[in-house]
Amino acid sequence: MRRLALALALLAGTALGAGCDLLAPAAPRPAVETTAAQRVPPATAPAGAKPQQPAPTTAAPSAQPATPAAEATPAAPARATPAPAAQRQAATLSGPRLKVVATFSILGDLVRTVGGERLDLRVLVGPESDTHTFEPSPADVAALAEATLVFENGLGFEPWLDKLYASARSRARRVIVTVGLPSPIPATDGDHGGGDKPDRDQAEQSAHGEFDPHVWHDAQNAMHMVRAIRDALAQADPANAATYRANAERYLAELEALDAWIIQRVATLPAARRKLVTAHDTFAYFARRYGFAIVGTALGSFTTETADPSAARIVELVREIRAAGVPAIFAENVSNPRLMQRIAAEAGVALVPDLYTDALGKPNSPGDTYVKVIRSNVEKIVTALSR
Ligand SMILES: [Zn+2]
Figure 1 (tube, helix red, strand yellow):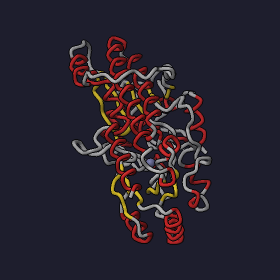
Figure 2 (cartoon, rainbow, N blue to C red):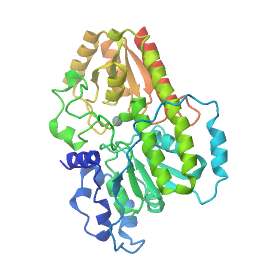
Figure 3 (tube, protein in one colour):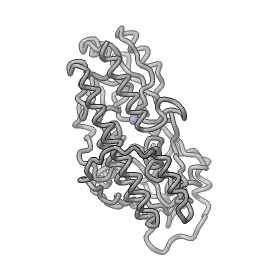
Figure 4 (cartoon, rainbow, N blue to C red):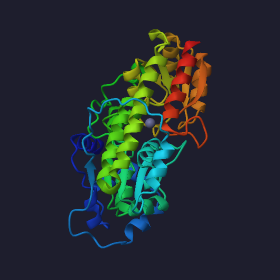
């Protein structure tokens, strides 16, 4: 139920009370004693228990909504100016670099693109790593303790963050980049695979967030995230606001073009073939914007934390895959592929390896930026389902 309250609080743009933990580190409030929080390894506890700074006498910084995004930002024509030029320019500007944390690699890429050389950026959950099951390290505690801003996805994607933030006694402003998102998909409402609904336990749903957190698979949502990042950076570092705005304007044009490219590329695939089967429920936003149906997912969950499905559930999914007539199903870079290999073999369909779902690929891979992630995924999906 706490997740529900959290999600609602995030959507309402209300402040979270994480900062009050700073006043009573020895007696954490119940909110941090969740299953997710217990995954924080013991190594982080000493750092959290050792006073590193006096308790603030005023209300500590807590989660704040990002400055409302400028929804009416027009689609500017793509510019020929390469991003590195802007970054070189930014590097010449005055002032110390802003210490910033981003929770996971895809969000980190958006932050890096908007902030460029002005930022001292640390990404907590790196490429090819799973945010749902992340276990923070002492180095992550230190990064949060020093940060001015923490960019987070929200919508229950980072179940470990409240505890980490409290352990670090962080005073960073928490910027939830999905605040104000026009239409987040409710966990109980979206069609995340007809057949797996009977298996999905209501308690499990509410335990993992009332809304689907995987917003970035819709390029328009990524633009919303970029506007939130731009506004937060400009507010935290006004001396360089013009640089952040220029970088964001250029990036927003690129993302608008990316969105148009996806629509154009998907249009080459007959509507009846736009059917996805993946490991976990990560493509609802992609499906909604670009006209796909989710046949089913192996885990039947918004998170990868869940246990492997039962034999009966696998039999059911195999039947759904055959009935849908899809030629291929998709593995993810953040999930163990063995389950999907087994399902593909039993269904007699191809398995397309490693869509970039919840994380970037490694540096110099075809998925080492957000834009490349989306392009790679769309190419793989359209190609595999065209056969
Ligand atoms: Zn996920």
